[in-house]
Length: 192
Length: 192
Image (cartoon, rainbow over all chains, first blue to last red; front, side):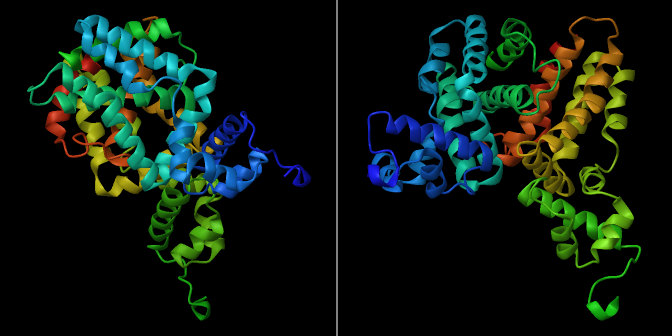
């Protein structure tokens, strides 16, 4: 394969493909991104994408995968008193969405979800599993807990959208501490 | 012009163009939509788009224009006590984003803003004028009022996103009354 100038399947190949996938999904969204475009961006043989990820959907899921699975991150809220839980939820969420590494991931997610039913369905399932299920476990049997959890999700998604996609001042420049101080009490209201 | 089968500039032409613009911007976003595509969708001469709206930006602004200007809608919050203000803010907002007429508008706004710096800048300016300025007038001199107002904007934008773009249950099916009951107290916290 070195004759074609394309990278063979070295151990770093998987990471190179994931980086290219994040760039392509972030720029063009899920529907408009082809496996061929990603393999070209990554300078690897298209067959390697199938080898590592099976399908475009598989590659998308891997590309938007966050360093630590979100359900595990948010599962901590289950084990804490409500006030600390609200604080920790906002702080952990900001750590994830503010990280340099996650910027392309978020853009890819949002851009894909607003233009593709398939990507929207994946993000919907992801929020359900990572946030709504976890919060519901705190308050089993409470009638509207899932609606309140979805309003927490709306607050958090809105913050990522305005902070990193629209870059609305002063939210785009506010420190995580300032945001936690103001948002945690609102989250606490929804939790209790 | 009847020879070409295109509609001449009748009084309804402007509305026909606006409807076509909303459909095109909602489907493809701001950058990927051309005046030519809109005139073709509307079956009118491209020159009429220039005649009525000047530029693509002018047409976009007119197309996303809501029935009543949002600053006027939200200006009511300035004149009311905080609790009623929070209730009214959420209720009026839901009336706007839940209306059939606004669905394409919202999709056009979100889809354009995540894929185009120009559209993002317009939406940013719009939120600043319609919401942040209005709330700041309530609490002049309060240091972090603009940050708190931007968190209210984040909550409201997140609700439109999860309710109408991602259609996350149960938020997608919840009644306006249920949402107002839960969200207004959170907004009130940010206002006071």
